[in-house]
Image (cartoon, rainbow, N blue to C red):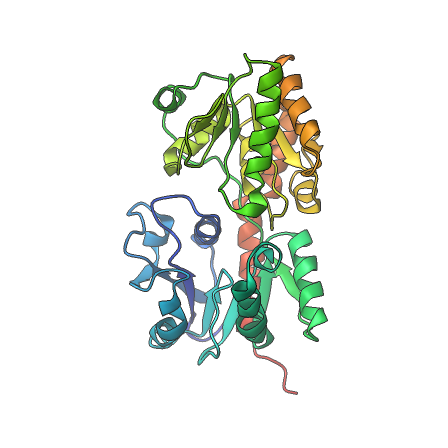
Length: 361
């Protein structure tokens, strides 16, 4: 492979749009990490029409697809669209999968969330589409050791054994507007609000967090507001920011008194690590993957995502104490652990393994 023409890898990046998307961030991290690296393959990204003009993906060869990400259309039409590109490898960085492939394929499976918190359709999809696709995959990755171990156990329970690589997210401060502009837009003040960057899906546990906050607010009516990145009606001290433009996320993270993340389940848990990199204290659910993601952050506080009173008391504790500052050691740990250099190394190895000839059986 090293001495011949470069191999063509097509990467599905249709989820990259004007608003933040976890898998979209992951794909762009890989693109940014591998951009200046000498490699025996070329990357082509399959993008949506609304992929931002300033996305790093635009520095590569791109092919625009009008088939929406995770739509029913992709099950029937996307396979042919990819086949016409004649890839030496197709990388699906999500659980999007087909019945069969006319080309080699590699997957990143971020988590098994849909097996735990979704309905019958999603479980059938995983069992009858994703699992057979993984059976024929040239390589499989996940984004954390915790998620990789869970994926491995699930596959083994269906008599499928395959090495699972870890290609992690990169954590870096997103570009942002001045803090004063971001805060003024939502009526917030520096270090005088709590923040949760999440979505309303059941496993994100936001109703639990809201109830814990309202219980704290009932005890202390002067408690700083809780800002949520979701839509909703104004409540007693709860500010719904709605879906946030990418350039407002960094200043809102950096200016918060503390960042709350009560998820019941994650494959990685990117937002609390981003908060740390911007110097904000993370209050995270005590689940294995967040213990892994924040392992080197000594100030991180972990609370049971089932113990609402513990979260209520944490809101009250933070109000009654000076704003906590993170150590340079903790910030440096996140910066080093989730660097673009580490993503480049792991992603490059993942692609090389997927392109390597398979041993004859």
